[in-house]
Every structure is written in C-alpha cells, then in structure tokens.
Image (cartoon, rainbow, N blue to C red; front, side, top):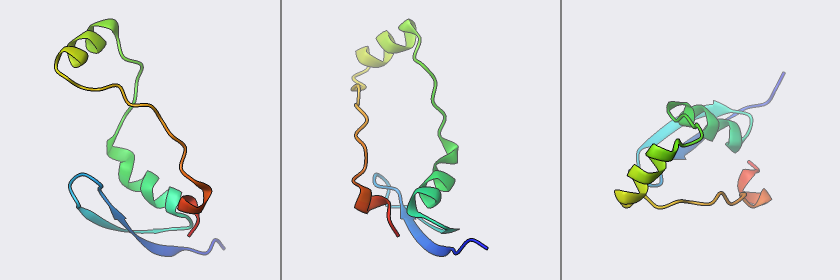
Length: 69
C-alpha cells in the first residue's frame, strides 16, 4: 500500500487552489496539470506567438527539496 497525503496545489498565476491526495508533490502537481498539453511548435505557430509577444521560456529543473513531501 502506497502512503499518501493530501496536498494543496496552488496555481502560481491565478492563486486557484486544489486539494489532491497523492504520494508525492510531483504526483499532486501532475494530477492538476492534466489540462495542459505540449507539442513541438510549427514554424507558423512560432512566428505568430513571437509576434504576439509570447516569450520563449527555458525549463529549469526543480531543486530536489521542492519535490519532497
């Protein structure tokens, strides 16, 4: 049996909060983020979004302590 806790997951932009039962913080965040999808941008999407002022963001790994319960 996997031990779980109830985590509060907060949207960093909207401050919307969720209660998620999961084994780790990473699982709790993954559960809430199911509404997102990712795909490689087409050249047209890239040009249109850059023209609209959408910045290119670079992934940064979380510190290990941020992933621990």
